[in-house]
Picture (cartoon, rainbow, N blue to C red):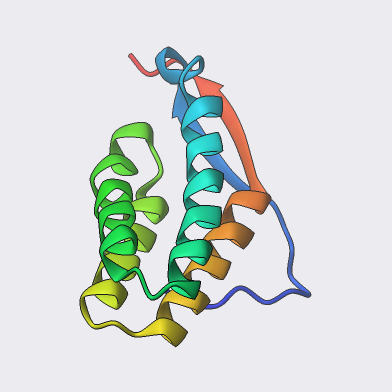
Length: 110
């Protein structure tokens, strides 16, 4: 994943199927929870916990319309497999910035 420039904090607009509207706030709240838990796990060198969180994001992101979350999940999973703390720290911070910049619109896809 690339880094996000702090000077370029434009919103990231995502179009999500209106059928998922009720589930998206909870899904995103759980990703913020993942960010906190990954940072805590990183401090404890608990790579297994990071691997599980990354794997979960990798599997769920696209299903909710967030392909980028899938990419972050894959990156975190890879970082955990390789026990690369610096890489994990960078990616989890990029994930947090991504989440902070999301602007979601719901549309009917027929």
